[in-house]
Length: 320
Image 1: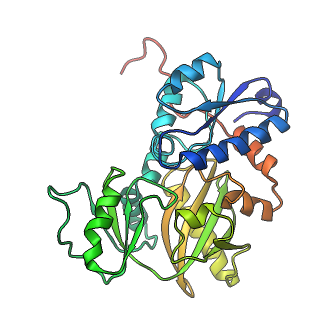
Image 2: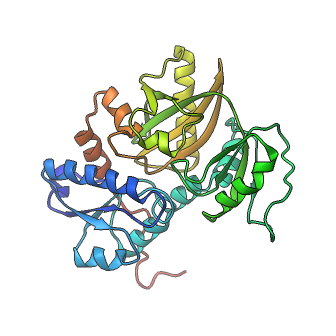
């Protein structure tokens, strides 16, 4: 953790862009974060997170990293591991928590084993030779087929006809890391923002398309945002409690967003924890924070103040 005076003496690199399918969203998040830091008087610069990231960090003499990345090779522990090795403090969750949260199959198992409600699903580790020709799904259609390690609904298909399963599976396998075939739950989209281990509030998303896909998330006018989520007080609190549990079970830190589905009174399903939630003009965490009186610059400042390293350096001569 840093004090404001200490941080303002350090050079901060805002990591953005990257090599995932969410690159354009990351650039939007990164630019907004960078501008907020500059307006607050921090010494901040943009750093492109490509295969030359280590060299860029060294060339810029970056002392603290604000991670504005989304998706694979940014949100999955990869960049976090690099920063640990370079001894550069960074924002958000550590290596393990990032990897666990990014892998939907693993995080679902952790949630389920600890009593959190999750949708029924099956996991396929790799595309069978010749592709999927027949897949017996142990629950009724429609189903949602998604890559196991992508975010922002990238590569996600809602399938109602069994004949469409092979093509949807092939699309999802194209992102690597296996796929989830998940029961489609017709419910309300509830998202909870968490900051410094405290659940700030819940927002409801009402998409104007079939489901809350990538286009709806990043196109103005394709989804209605209701804050606070119009739930009964007990249900609202349950959404906050489930989200806090999911955040803690994975060992997450800093700012996260937890995605839930609400089907009927008292019935929620935990979908996933986003360890690097979007910071764009249409992003939900900033909107939730704003609804709780935390304006965007303050949100950015609180996140950067939580930057730190998690892996201690072993002293020379210490035994293994």
